[in-house]
Amino acid sequence: MSTDRARQAPRPSGRPARQAAQRRPRPLPKGDTLFTPEASPARQTIEQRSATVLLWLHQLPRWLAPVLAVALLVTGLAVGGWAGAVALFGLAVVLAWLASLSWPQLPVQGRVLRIAVIVLVVAVAVVRGLHG
Image (cartoon, rainbow, N blue to C red; front, top):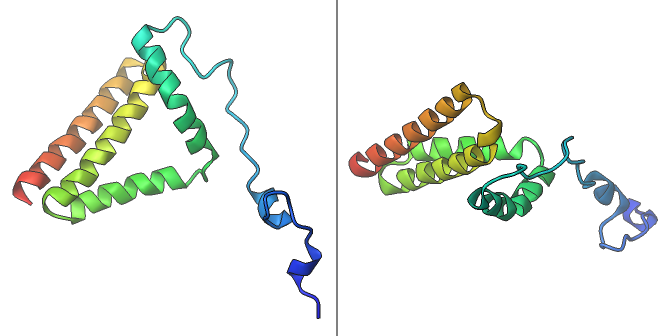
């Protein structure tokens, strides 16, 4: 009696060959560096502390981050009170973090739009928290 598992050679990680092949890391985006050249000390600190998280996020499936953002938004809008507000504040923090990382590359319109979205999410969170 043979099974498909018996035919697969064990990998050093203990996973079958098919699963190991599916989890190959995605290549990094093209570019010279992950960091902003000639950045201020504060910006260098933010970029260095964010690098590990960004690389980890980059290895996740592409659809996961937007789905989690939508889940936070829907939770924040559907759940009343401070529980919904916390979800919206969490979304605002993530959006602000990503906006701060992309800030040097953004045109003025992109900066204004990101600030407007973050302010809107925070305002809705406050309203949900106070009136929910």
